[in-house]
Image (cartoon, rainbow over all chains, first blue to last red; front, side):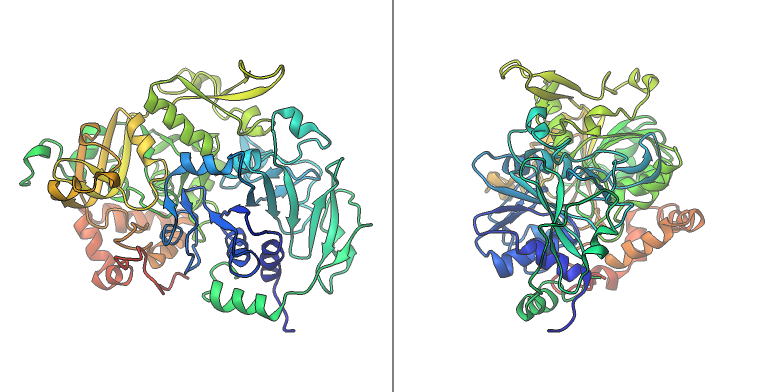
Length: 253
Length: 325
């Protein structure tokens, strides 16, 4: 087994969470890689689509953004934003969204808008895009965030995309009929959410990673009692990712 | 200027389209999405004509948004997302302008913004959504009370209301409709009769155009009426909604236009470096906007070899194997 980078393991770990029959909403960056990994390796019967309106593209080449002409080629159909969100929200579909964020709290609420006061931000990020919509409307959400106490925070500077809100049944009480985050994929571990309290816990750590190295990057207390070591990436997973999916290393680097 | 009698009074240059339909303070909906089909020829012309205080209404935008903000043309934005793929995880001039308090900003989501245009196109005052309940998008207003009084600004960002058809306590988000002064669309084709055909994803271009008071369409090609009407299923806007038609080959460069050209990674990398520093950005504007009289001179600067490199495969729609680093 050769070594692997953080991004490679993130893409592979997330790709493994997708099942045949899932409808995958992919965003920009690592989530694009993970969606391609799941389609090419783990779940050829999954369908990838983009908030811009491209449904089931062939993905012969890796798109660099969700508006890339590469998400329009070999598709079942090309449409627009209004139609795309009717797929995200569709009650008959198991739509799973891959989302990134700058900050996350223990209930999987996400910030991709700003640091500091919203009206006088210290740092401005791109904003919701379709993330708030996918987090509100999809059947499930898988999140990518790199570990770090400035990212896994007690309190978000701005709540862009709803996770489990305040935990327990607060998401349902707020008016959401389904959805909520199921996993957080980081460069060292995969975190999941407790069945009833909806608090984040450590589910898997990657081969060779110490549990302390994971908890050191999280600013809130976290249950590690259920943690197991992940299976390492297989030679096949790494080869397909490196040679077929992102040979120019557009997202891997 | 043409042999197209049906659209003679709509055909014009980018200079004339901007002069006629854009004013200081106009509310503008930009077509395209991040790195794809941005109406760049019109954006450069807006900057050249020194138009100020624009109010942009956007879902996810990249190159045109960033350039217009950087050039000081923008006072206010309602927006879901400002980024340019891997060239800018957050648009650089956009970010600087927000962090320095140089523009007024109010955040929505993509679904919310596209629904607002849809509502505007249907002539309804607001539209409900389940998106954003319990978030700061719903809780936090960006505009102050003075901005709320201005023309084309909704009196409230949005309203959380009880679903009148739902169970007790069930809440929904009511979003105000948008009717911008101008929508800018870059399409692959316009027919000799003015019918518009966009190839690939339409994003929210159609809803934006239908909601606007005026529509400028730039295009790569003007096609015979007999051809555009042979397959009307492919068309997306009728001529009577369009006010200005401007033929501008490579009009979306450096963003992509499916079947015509890919995004220009070389130009976008150069832009990214320039955008990081005020002086370098000013130099970019001097060279690429003010230093050229029109789009033809701009394309001369990009050069034949540069344009050939990004020429799209006419079947696949992009440029296979293009070095996009």
